[in-house]
Image 1 (spheres, protein in one colour):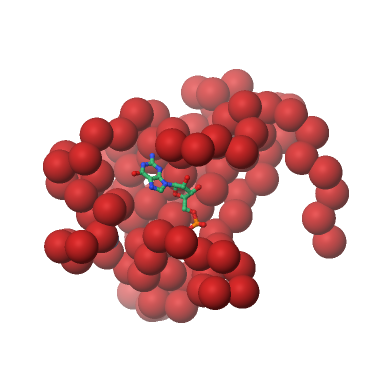
Image 2 (cartoon, helix red, strand yellow; image 1 turned 90 degrees about the horizontal axis):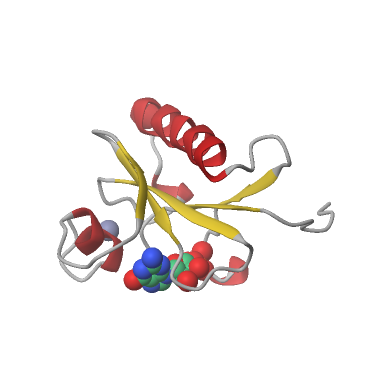
Length: 114
Ligand code: 5GP
Ligand code: ZN
């Protein structure tokens, strides 16, 4: 746990969050400032600052993250209509919270990327 990290505090139960999925390695909760009708964040329970900090040994964390993404998509009703999964890394991507998180957004047409 990083003591000054807001997402570590959510994992520790020190800050409330509207949880939608939890297992031993990951947690998913609604974004406080949703950018789409469904906007959920999926995070590892252990503190990793960003994608840059992922290690080959973190394969279990990553597979749990994408299991959580699937569960969130199912339970929020966007699995079939579609959704976007995004991890911002660093300054140019506008990463604000330096605890790895995957945005899961859907419930409307998001426009095409790429
Ligand atoms: P980033 O720009 O770092 O990829 O996104 C951080 C996200 O975390 C933002 O969408 C922001 O609304 C969300 N966020 C920041 N603080 C909190 C919080 O205390 N609770 C929740 N649920 N979301 C937060
Ligand atoms: Zn953290």
